Length: 598
View 1: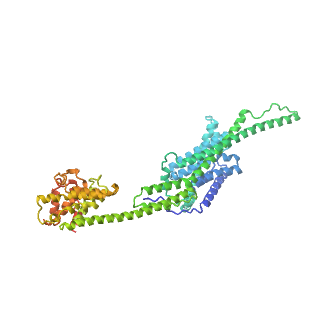
View 2 (view 1 turned 90 degrees about the vertical axis):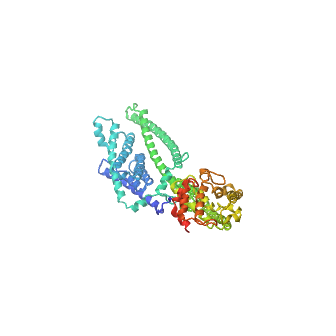
View 3 (view 1 turned 30 degrees about the vertical axis):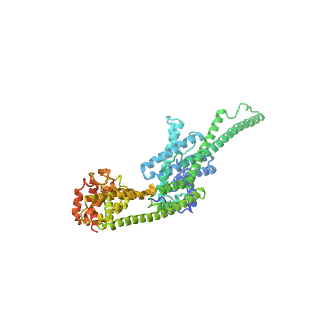
């Protein structure tokens, strides 16, 4: 059984400090990169180096913090419109995390593909957003390149802006990726492990266990999807109301400001003797254009804020809610499906999860843990009682068999040896793939433990017949043959006093007692069954019983040599014995000899 808990130690106490340091460092790198290219008038941006570096080192949570707050701080100290680009910066953080986890940055061609995708996000989306807010052809890093394309006369201003921004952004992201990879490479492995913050509220899981839980199918909608839907509805509704109200207020402000400005200008004109009666405020078209620009900025800001909130919400719910619940579900399923051998190990694994969310989930974990511990204790007690009952049952069987042997002075160790021979035959047949549909572990156990009862019917036979030194007369042999049915009757009486599910091995004991003198060719007794009409357990016992009888000394005969007894078994295959059973016996002669020569 594979443990789902990661054995590596995690320093959870300092994770908040690491997160703060990473976010601060990432924002500083973004600002420094942007100021650097601006200072030397380099046609690049370099405002996402910190976002990429932090996403590679710490994952998408600190990455989206850097992406969003870089835009937020830039809007406070540099350009108020910069917050509208938070959508692009947050997307870059998420893409970088995905590319890094999928090891794209270790393959040159995948690095190129990643940069081209960055170009679509930063270049194409950025160009569209810039064009709407500032107008196409505004002052950007790609302005000079844009003029060259536009002045060729083959493209519109919009098309030229898309091409120019995409090309420049691809170059910018290629340099940014290389810088981020260099920084990541320089950082020692031990530091990288500490920077990769995971907000576990339980014992950390192995990557394989996390992947198993994330790829598991839900009946309808996964908990993760429900979190996404809830956050989307909540932020979407708030954003819609905020954007709608702010846009209407902005529109009203433009209209009113235009009217006030015209009125003041006309009054000044009248005092100055200038006729300004012809001027007018913004037209409907101009007002609509300004309102559209404002709404676009608001929507872009909302999308960036939504991705930020969604990312943080999913991340926190993952470690506070989804993974703890899935871990309990996975551990519980292994517990319920576990065999007796690994039951305690599975329970220990559940205990090692150590969920500490501090809420109802932790309460549920504690309750499940107590229930599992109680179940393990009860199973151990039940196992101990079953072992005692089984030992007692086997003792009674052998005591009964010994009682029969004490009356039949010539049988000796017959019942014990025949049981060992049956086990040898069954194991050999399993190894050879013979009758595997019937030779279940339960069947093998039942036959082996009930084998000593195959001659229990002899208890009803007179001592005069059992110990007669000579050959039995036909009449005496007829009486002797009744021990088969008598044995079945005795076992049947025992079974009648037990519940059906507890009869177990006695079903095979009855078959052994009743049919172990049947022959494969149909000439045996008491029923004259033929071939596979004879129960398999009885066909196995027939070989074991005859062989042990051959090599044992009886009151009416001497023991046969081992090799001669084997020859008789081989010659009787297909007439007295099931050929497959006889062949399995013959194929295991080394083990048979060990029992026979004891």
